[in-house]
Length: 402
Image 1 (cartoon, one colour):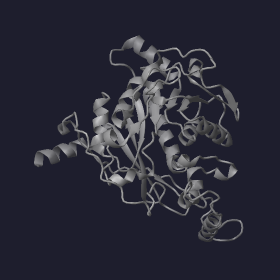
Image 2 (cartoon, helix red, strand yellow; image 1 turned 60 degrees about the vertical axis):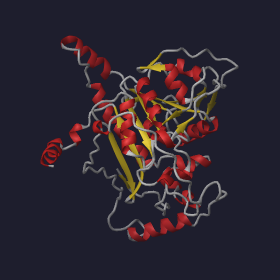
Image 3 (cartoon, one colour; image 1 turned 90 degrees about the horizontal axis):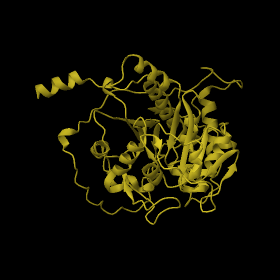
Image 4 (cartoon, helix red, strand yellow; image 1 turned 120 degrees about the horizontal axis):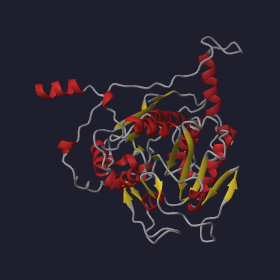
């Protein structure tokens, strides 16, 4: 999906690029051996493009009589003329220059921590991914299980149609994607459950959501380990282990900018079910691109901390890699619709290995997100049938001809 440059001051196009002055990285570790035969994996590329168009009220000039090109130049110049108020070793100048690309309302008081500056999803990309959840909602509302028919089928279809989705944002961070989900109508998404191990990030996410006017009852923030929550508390979208009542042993509850932030005990109130999961896990810092094009292996390069010694309310949960993470998420959802935000250089066969390990069959979809013709990140979608995007007849003819 191509995002337009509407940031009014984001003049650089290297959002996720590594620092040019970074030292040469050490050689990558060997890639773990695949458990599944490559014969079971096919990678297609479809000539599809979603363009997010710029909103321009006039094709001639603004109210001052200046042409749009001149206005654009002056806006860029004014935005870039604002010096970076942060220590460059914490917030690099290039991230500061693109602040309005991260959040269009940045100047209204958006808050980010050091990690958020390089890891938050640009707003135009987050909105696009959210639109895919809306598409999926229509699909699931009309879905009927294979063994349902007649009156029971119609009844089940009606029950599904009456319930908007509950989305689990497993790695909330400073809230870019959660805000995009909450922009969707309540008839599509009723609640977003946001999990992060860092309460400071959750507070920033709540603050940022308030700037966008998100209703406080749409998002609940949970301070917990997301791997432990998905693995220990949910099966097929249902809460299977009741979190304990409020206790002094658990992270305290607070209301921050009108949003509730608490521990796993709040799942008793809103988290009785989850329909879909969105994951934008840590990629390993800004050096993820050091493994080269198509070199990011989910088993080798992505490591997500569990609760090795046991978190509050959880038995010990070991560290998981990027392949195991998808398997945990797929088992936790009702619809098995999991959306996985990944580095732009993710190895596609590594991703397919993860899908097979998680029990997915058929196909998945990987979208590449471009801003100003530069590839920024990719998003994988699992749990739907995407065959309609492919020219399978053409592929079969080419295979037979070869």
